Length: 439
Ligand SMILES: Cc1cc2nc3c(=O)[nH]c(=O)nc-3n(C[C@H](O)[C@H](O)[C@H](O)COP(=O)(O)OP(=O)(O)OC[C@H]3O[C@@H](n4cnc5c(N)ncnc54)[C@H](O)[C@@H]3O)c2cc1C
Image (cartoon, rainbow, N blue to C red; front, side, top):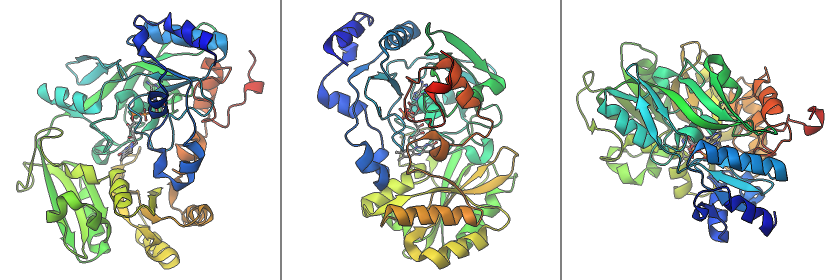
């Protein structure tokens, strides 16, 4: 991208200070938590955009896309940049569209739907929602930094998914307005089932510019920890609470030893050599241990769950990495046994219970894995799949394997329609072929 093109961009944005060109800033805005994967670390470190733009409204987004289309410049959208697989790393340079300034909460409707811009931080939404008797149905453990648009663009679920399923389930995402990358970019409303064409597509087939996100009634939560002699004892206890609908819960997590030893700030709840269970349960249902008043008033046990667990493990020993798995509710104990038999303590079990789309609570997992080579990691992934353990591979940088592959191809069809020249986050949807699209 030459200087003339960059200068042209500045004319589109009301305040040229929101067109960023300093190399250190471009480097920061071109990266996320891709370094979580020892495989992606080397591949993505040097990738960088040519310029970053921070629009404040949808008109500016439209103007940038119109300009980028005319000049055939790639555009990679960024929320807060907390994604794990280099989802918002621009593989082919071009423009990073940083939506962090589009962060307005427009309203919370009387029936509990937040209407907001994509850059709104999830923690801000949680705090605001609780003021009117609502709360997030689910959030990633990156709650404090992550944006609503980035969660819908690249996330899947998190704390709360044990009750409400994942983003893709149960109308959790009601609607959004999508900005397209057609010859004449426009704003298109997707609602109901049509949200699945764009949801979790990593900004490859449209940009979410306005979002209707369903909330749940606010609950007063208590954080509970319990230590067990064996992993299976811990797993069975957590599972008994997770699958029983009489408990109102937001989180049920199981860690086998030594994962709890990595959680140094909360070592008072860790017992040496023992498996640990973390639960967030309605205060009315369990004796109060530690009151939950919203994010960040005190250490949150959820800071140690979901993909934060991996972060603590990597802090303790950089050789650790992770996988994203789904065990079979019917024979997970046999799957645990087979994995332990083949890989010993190369794989450490970390379970997150969550509800699937059929309403069944299942043992999802983000096991901590000791990395040696890419071949060994791929062997583990292949073996998991051969014994019926689902794996979303966090060591690749494209949607089809790392995300949730959609056999119905509706995300691909939407890309062919909305981004026929393949300029949105190029390289991340590998089933897209520009040659096959009639321009
Ligand atoms: C320690 C740690 C823990 C995590 N825990 C969880 C977890 O529990 N659950 C979970 O689901 N994820 C988790 N993640 C991943 C990530 O934090 C979440 O998915 C988060 O919601 C991403 O939000 P973000 O604003 O940082 O998005 P970004 O990283 O900025 O973007 C994510 C993807 O969405 C696209 N995107 C961003 N904004 C838009 C938009 N407006 N329109 C279209 N596409 C867009 C980007 O191009 C990118 O492909 C974790 C990551 C880390 C590092």
